[in-house]
Length: 305
Length: 305
Image (spheres, rainbow over the protein chains, first blue to last red):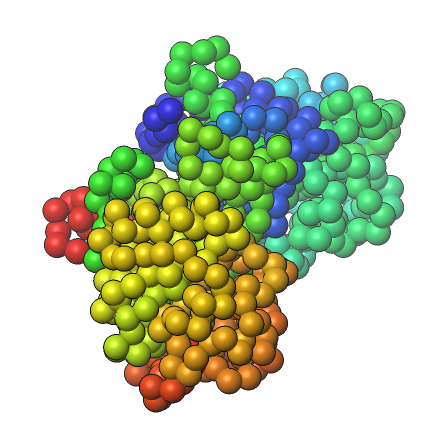
C-alpha cells in the first residue's frame, strides 16, 4: 500500500469545524480503550526551537504527531504539526499529514466538545481570556455549539483586545467587545482561557453559579490559568486525568478530575444542575491528532467524514 | 519549501554500504554536540505490534525515526522504519523517508565503523553469532573494512547456520562455514553478535587477546549477549554511554564505556595494542537515522553523497 501524503495546503483546505468536532468526539471516546505514550519534548540545535512527540494508538489508528514551535518564525506560523499514521496491519507508513492549520481546529474542537457536554444549554455570553491566534479558533468553535449572542474579550493589552473583538465580529458576525477581567468573568456563561499564563487569570469569586470554564492554554509544569479556589466549588473534567494532574491545569488541584470521554460515553455524570460550575482542562493528547488525520484522509479520498 | 518524500522502493534503491558508513561516521562524530531525547516504546491496539520513537538533533538536522516491529508480518519484513526530518529554519516538515531496507544498512554501518576504528588491521576471521536478516548485513558491512577471508557462523539451529553460511558465500564470495560456539569464538579476530538473546552467548575465556567484539543485538532492559567476565579484560566502547549503561549491553558492566564518537574524533584512545580485547555495544540512536535520511536525500537529488 502506497503511503498517502496530505500537504499543509491540502489539509488546510479540507479541515472545518464539523470535521474537527467529529474527530475530537471519536478521540475522547477512544480514551477509555486507547493508549497514549510518554510525551517527548525535544529541540533543534537551536534550543529555543522545540518539537514535541505525542504518540498513541486506538482501534485501527497508531502513530505520532510531531508538533513544532519555532518562536522566531515571521513569515510562517510559529507552530506547525505533522501527523504520521502507521498501517495497523503491517506497521508500515500509512500516511503523513501536515496539519499546522488543522491543529488549531483540533484544539478548538476539544473545547467545543466540552462545552457541548458540560455547559448550560442556554449559554449566551462567551468570555474569552486571551487574544492570540488560538483564542479566535476557540470563539468560533464554541459559538457553534451553544446559542452564543455576545462575546466578551479580556486581554492584557487594550489595543490587542479591541483588535481581537473586531476580528471576532468580522469572522463570526457576533457582537464582541473588550472588557476588564472582572466584568468578563462575572458575565460569562462560558469562560474560555487561551493563554500561556503561569498564574491565575481571575478571582474565583467572580465566577457565577452555572458557568462553564474551559482552560485551553499551553501545558507544561508550572502552567496555570485558573485560581485554585475555583476547584472547591466546581466539578472538574479533563481529557486525560493522569496528564492533566501532571502537566495540566489540575496539577494545582487535589482530587482526580473526570475524563470527558467517560461523560460522553455515559459512564460518568457531567453537569448535574444549572447551578454547577464545570471546569474542563485540555492538555491535548495524541488520539486527537490521529483521529483528525484519519478524518482528513477520509475526506480527501472523497468519503463523507 | 515543499516536503520531500522518499518511498521505501526509492530509499532501498539509493542506499549502499558506502553511503551508510559515511552517514554513520557523521552521526557518531555528532554525538559530542548533538542531542538525543528519551526513546518512546509504543504499541498499536494489538500490543505485540510495537513502534518506537527515537528523536534527536545535531547541526541542521532535527527529527524522529518511527521504527516499527510487527512480528506477525509474513509477506513484508517485520521491521520497518520511517524517518521524519524537520526544516531547521522553520520547524516545518522537510522530508519523510521510508527506510525499512536502509535501516539494516544503517545498523550494520555502525558495526563496520566500530570495526574500522577498533579491530586489528590484520583481522581475517569474522565470526558471527546469529543467523537472522541483520546478521547478513553485519557480515557484508564488516568484511568491507577489514581483509576478512573467512566467516564462521554460530547458530542455535544447525540447519539455519548452514543455510546462513551458504547465503554469506553467495552474497559476498567469502568462504563461510557453521561452527560451534567455542570454535567460532576462539578463532575470531572480529566477533559479531546479532541476536535477541537475554543471556550470554559464549564463555569469556574463549575470547583470544586481540579480538574485537561488536554486540549488535536488539536492545532493551534485560538484553544480554556478552558474558560479564569479558568486561574485566576488555576496553569498552559504545555509541551513547548513558543509553548503553541503561538499556544496552553495558547495563551489566561496572564503569563507563567510551563513546566511539570520541575515538573517531581523536579525543579518546581506541585500541592501544594488538593484544587488547575491544568491545563495542550498539544500542542505536536517532542521529544515525537523521544522517542516513539526509544522505539518502542528497543522493536522491543528485548530489554526490
